[in-house]
Length: 389
Ligand code: PMP
Image (cartoon, rainbow, N blue to C red; front, side, top):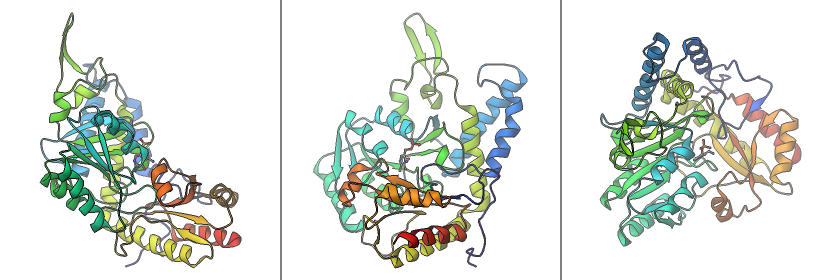
C-alpha cells in the first residue's frame, strides 16, 4: 500500500506543521521518541564510569546500552567496537589518524570524507558516468598500488545517490584494503548491515538521524584503533598512570577521553530504536513515493535541472535532491521558498569538487526529507517553484 496518502510516518512534537522542513540532510528534526527518552533520563543524569552512586551507575548502564543499540542497528560483528564521537567529521578524523597506509576516495565526497585522508596519503578516483564504470576505475586504482582503505559515502549528501556497498566492500577486500562507509546520509534512510556486507568501518551523526547535535559514532573493526595512540589524551582513556608511564585502555574507551556526551549517545540509541520500530521497509516505501513525486514534479518544471552523478536509471536514491532553476541564483530560490515557509539548503553543501564536476560552481538548491515529511510538503515546494519558473 502506498503511504502517499499519509501525512507522515510520525508526528513530531518539535516541528511546527506549517513550516515545511525540507532540509533533513543538514539536520533532521528530533523524533518524538528521542525527545521523550532524553526527558526521561535527564532527571537521573550523572557522570559515567566514575561514581558508585546510583545515578552514576544508571547513567553508565544507559551509556553502555546505547553502544549495544548502535551495534545492533548496523548489525555489527560481535567483536566490532562502537566509539562515540562528536559527529561524522570527528569519527572520520579519528579513523584518519589510525589508518596504516593510503586511502582511496571518490571525487564526489563530502569534505568530511575528503580532507582528513591527506595526512596518511590520499588518492582520488574520478567517478565515471555509471556505477559499474566507477567500480571498475576503483579496482584499477586499488590494483595499481596498495591502499589501506577505500573510503566512500553511502548516500551522496547532494544527489541522494546510493552506492552498492556490498560490491564496494568486496572489491576493496579483493585488493587487500578495508572499506569505510560514510553513512551520515544513509543511516537515516536505509538498513545497514556490517556483518552482511563486510563493511569494516562505518560512521554517522546523531543530528542527521533525528537525534540532537553533538554526538556521532565510529563502528567497526577495533585493531587499528587499539594499535594507535589515543585520539585525546586524558581521563577515561587510561588504565593506570604512574609518572610518565601510561597504560591506555583498549577498545572504545581508548578514544573517548574526557566526560563523554552521554545524552547524545542515549539520544542516538533512541533514534536507532525508533527507526527500527517504524521499520526500514516502511521508511523505504514512504521515501520512495515522495522521491518519485518530487523528481517528477521537478522534471516537469521549465528551467529546473536536477543534479546526478551517475546515468544509471535504476540507482537507489534517498530523499535528497539537488537542482538549479534557470535565471535564478540558488540563494534567490531558497529565499523565495523560505518566504513561503519552506526550508531548503542552498550552496555547495561542503562538496565543492562534486559541485564543480556537476558544472555548478555557483551552487545549487537542495531539498531533503525523511520519515516526518508528507506529500503535501513536496507539493508545496513544487507549487512555490512553479511561481518562479
Ligand atoms: N558526510 C556526509 C555525507 C554529510 O552529509 C555530512 C554532513 N553534511 C558529513 C559527512 C559531516 O557530518 P557532521 O557535520 O555531522 O560531522
